[in-house]
Image 1 (cartoon, rainbow, N blue to C red):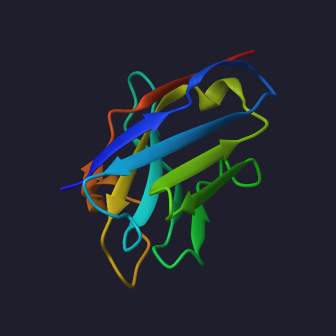
Image 2 (cartoon, helix red, strand yellow; image 1 turned 30 degrees about the horizontal axis):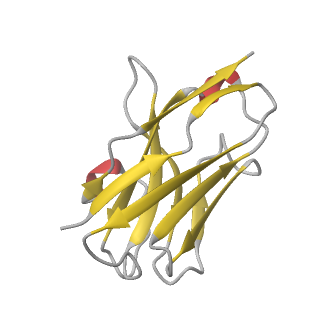
Length: 125
C-alpha cells in the first residue's frame, strides 16, 4: 500500500504560479508512473499530466501544455506539478495518483491505482 498526500494548493491570481507536491509514504514510487488529475465542481475528473516511471516520458493535457510541468524526486519520494500562467479555468481540486504499467503511460483515471485526497487550487480572474 502507498499513501499519497498532496499539498501546495491555494488561492492565486490569474497569471500566477503554484507548485503542487505529492508526497508518498508506505513504499517507494520509483517504479510507478505518476499522474496529476483535477476535478472542478460538477465535472468529471480529468487528466492533467503524467510522468513515466523511467522519468523520460511525459504527457500533458492540451489545456495545460506549455504552462504546467510534472517532475519527480525519487530520493524524496515526491512528485511535483509546477503550474505557471494560471487561468480561472484551472480552478479545481488537484489529485496525484500512481500507476504500475511498465510499457504504457495512461491518461484515463481508471488506470491509476492509488490516489491522494486532493488539494484545492483556486485562480481568481
